[in-house]
Image (cartoon, rainbow, N blue to C red):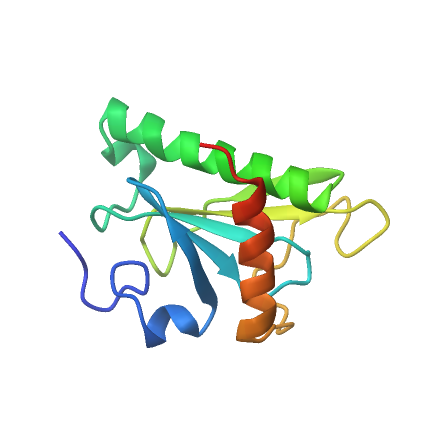
Length: 141
């Protein structure tokens, strides 16, 4: 079941505040996170229902979702060549299953520490489209 006030359940303005929908898989929404302090940062959100916890998915859906996370991580690696990719699955306030995939670059922002969720470094739609294009070009399901 979808949740009325959830930006991942309802596209449009709520999602557009922080993200740009790049593409969808059968299981997930792949979103450019508009805070591109870490170039190539993406979100992979579960799309079929408003699910809060990964353990709430059955084995088949969990495997499909985690495959999407891994496939997007591979695309980030190919497109942006980060030294590491950090993964964040926070849901204290929103409560919708999603992962932030945050490329980290040695000697750059927050290397060696936890990435900040929102630095205020938001890019415009054109920049989001460019990030989406790079990820799509390097995505292999």
